[in-house]
Amino acid sequence: MDEARARDVLAAAGALPGPAGDAQLLALGENAVFAAGDLVVKVGRDAELLERARRELDIAGWLAEAGVPAVRAAEPKPRLVEGHPVTVWHRLPDPERPAGPRDLARLLRMVHALPSPPFALPPREPLGGVERWLRLAGAAIDPEDAAYLRARRDGFAAAAAALTPQLPPGPIHGDALPRNVHIGPDGPVLVDLETFAADLREHDLVVMALSRDRYGLPDEAYGSFTETYGWDVREWAGCAVLRGARETASCAWVAQHAPSNPKALAEFRRRVASLRDGDEAVRWYPF
Image 1 (cartoon, one colour):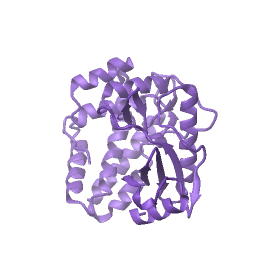
Image 2 (cartoon, rainbow, N blue to C red):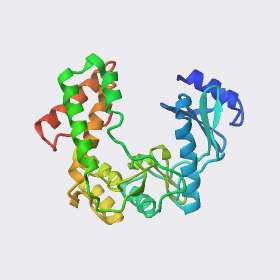
Image 3 (cartoon, rainbow, N blue to C red):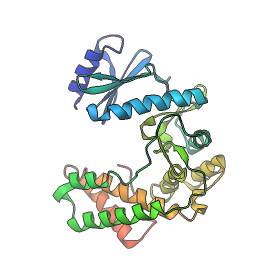
């Protein structure tokens, strides 16, 4: 779905004030995200995303009832417009400042204290996209690297299924990074609710541990995260398993961009080589 098609759907939905051509495009990926006035509209890539859109709205309503600061829906149900799911949201004010690890930890503590919602959440499957991403990479990557990642995927999937958690399982955000926190006038607000799941709470915490180990998050920043949350997941025996699963998925995710982007191919090779060598100190770069 390109921007022109997304704007056509936006116009047909009639959900924003003013002409669709005047709406501000905020993002274009699986969803095209537009803003105008006090509203934001997300246009999904295809009808297969309708159930996910419905669940995201349910999550937003559930978090509102629980008093968790999060983005709020302006309409409780998605629309299906010309084969595309459309959801309408209240627009957040301009950010006061960038979000940091401490802000994320505050929100995760609130989410992790919640009981299960009155509707089903899926399990967190960090390795679920590996096969599709490797398939999209095709001949651009070494077949031996693809086979190596498939073997890692299978091994870590089995190991993760056998873990004994330290924390009680339950609702998690699923993509717990500061980029998914918005700092408004009243403090941090959780955004991007599509990845919510019901699984080990440790999944949310390993993300920041990996940010420290692979992506250059300073020790001080990571320390502010663990201090605010109240626990360092690296103390848990299962941390290496969830970390390994996420590293495997991160390699495969970059691989899908390799056919059209030489920088992605170089980053993919860097990541795979560090995994093959068992070198946990090699710096990875966001892509």
